[in-house]
Amino acid sequence: MDEETAEKIHATRFYLGSLPNTLPITGRESSINALLSFSLNPEWVEDVGEEGAVNQALEAALFQFLPRNDAGIFKITTRGPAISALANVLETWIKKYPASMILQKWLQNALDSAKACFAECNVPVGKPFTPYQYFHRLSAQLPPIQSNEATGSAKPKKALKNVKKPDTTPRFSHPQMTRTTVH
Image (cartoon, rainbow, N blue to C red):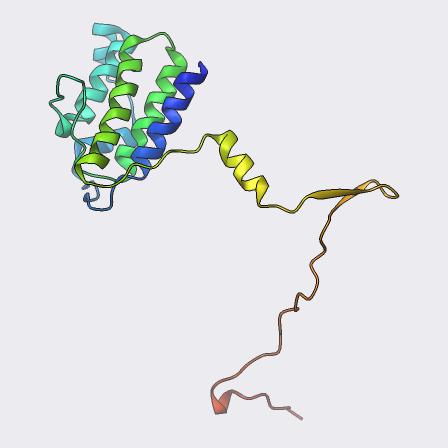
């Protein structure tokens, strides 16, 4: 999978996983729940091939969000694990068919639809971190590492001083729950 597609999948996963809280959670009876255990209909595979069957299964799962507009954007009306699973389904099948224009179009439409959902709900769209950015932001918060040349081990430059050890003395708030010695 190329880097641009991987970034789109990452962004789609971020946006679908953080849809506005103003949307209701997907109900149990919703067709989109098929994305949680995505599988292909063997008859569809036989009729239109595996790639075409993926397209049909996505259409069936996202039926409640269709029709799309001319730009391919479908209206996301619920949030939760089912819609979030769309990014995982697309990633799985794009890995298998990286040159598939149908799956690439689904990916772009899902990303655009998620962004449009934020706009429609008047919620500002954040920017997803790439794994590289996340690592560097996290590592910037850690103290620098200094090597101890005598032992070859690494220790943080600043030792934690004045850190109180937790008090492990039992505390009893009820008068009948005091410690007594049994003889």
